[in-house]
Image (cartoon, rainbow, N blue to C red):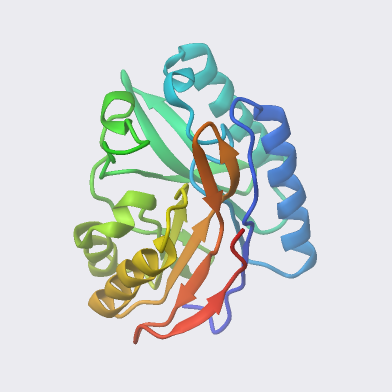
Length: 234
C-alpha cells in the first residue's frame, strides 16, 4: 500500500434519467478532485443514471446509453485520478447494479452488487441480478473493496474483500432517510470495520426521487470503530 492515498468523496445529487447531466456533475467532481491531488474520486451508487431508477433501467436502450456514457466519461477523465461511479451493467443477458472504476481512459474494473434489497422503497430483486462475491480492485498500489450499499449491511461481502487483499472499504450508497437512520448506518459500518480490521468509507448521495429523500451524511470509520470524519446531512 502507498504511504498516502487521497480520496475525494463527491456527496452529490443525481437526476434519474439525466445521463448527460449526471456525467457532467461527475466530471466536475473529478476535476475538483484532480485539483486537490486525489488518487481516487468517488461518487455514490447508481449515480450515472440517478437512483432509484425503477423500470426505466429495464429498457435495453437505456442500459446501453448508460454504459456508453460511462465509457465516454472514462475517456474524458483519462489524465488524472481514477473515478468510481455507480452505473447499471448489462452482460450475458443479465443486469447488475454495478460500481465502475474508470482509469486510464477505460472502464478498468467493476464491482457487482451481491445483496439486493427487496423491502420498503426497494424492488431490486425484480430489477437486477445478484453479482458474485468478488475481490478488490487496484488504484495504483492500493487495493480497495467496494461493497455496494446493501452489501455493506452484511458481513460476507466485506469479509471476502478483506480476505482477498482489500486495504480499505469504500461503500457507495443510495440510502434514503428515515428517523434515526444515521445511527443505524454507523452501527453497521462500525461492525464491518471491527470485523475486518479495515477503515470504512461510507459515501451516500443527496437529493430526492419520488418518495425517497437521500440525506448524505457520508462518514469514515477507523478500524477500531472510531468515527474519523462526518460530512453534513441534509
